[in-house]
Length: 334
Image (cartoon, rainbow, N blue to C red; front, side, top):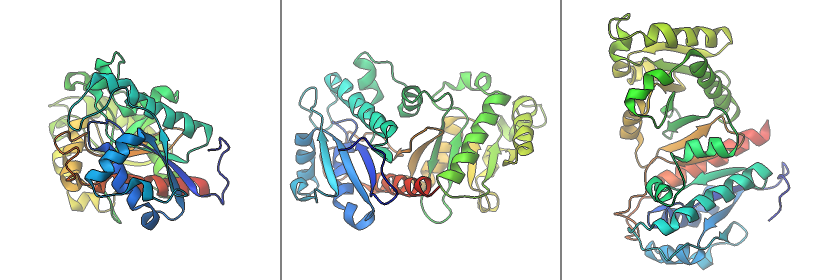
């Protein structure tokens, strides 16, 4: 493996972290890699994880790991802290999971990888191992020294539903104080920029929700729309960003509004994501916008009850890889 940045003629190089070893991540990775040659002819993949674990989970889904084409799929062996049993969390593997993510981030920052795709991890295992950890999004921001990032989940298809978040993993009581004019403006700038450079959308249209029921009803149900969201939208519009709103969240998610929209910006996690996941679960993806690297992921958790059974659906991981490859193509073409 070279640390030099890939040339424009080289295959795209994508890293995949296999996530929580007791969850479905390893077997979903195997399923995706079995389809790699057919899906992504211009890419090669490095899978970060314990090779013995990958071989074991490959059997559960009927894939011969050793038979995968070595010129397309390679494994960077990173040994487990302790042997892992499907469905059984072990705190001794918490640092192993974080080590996979660190290796992927370091490789992407060095130019070895054009993008990274992350299988789901278990936050509690990492925290129980003594490492404060809020989630992939916040950790990626910290490790890449990025002052502001944006979580965006998306469906698939020609006009996919995309939902970005102004705040992420916060208690609901903390959301109003976390919303500021400068913060929302920064979020809109990131969404606008990355929809253009990663997805090739020349003039993204962003619809913005209010925070309160009925978008505050002119202040009767809260003033955040008047004091924070509307001023942020005005400043964004002055910069040439096509951001509209604030709209009541309970009526925004319908075709007559979304048909011409490229992304919805919701104010908090459970305002926008239930709708997105209802519409796309199993095929949706998670994208971290604002980073100096490309990162995509699945839209689901570790599914401990399905791990090792061979019944897990690899659709979301395949969609995440597909998005990472597409985004890397757009970035390389710039």
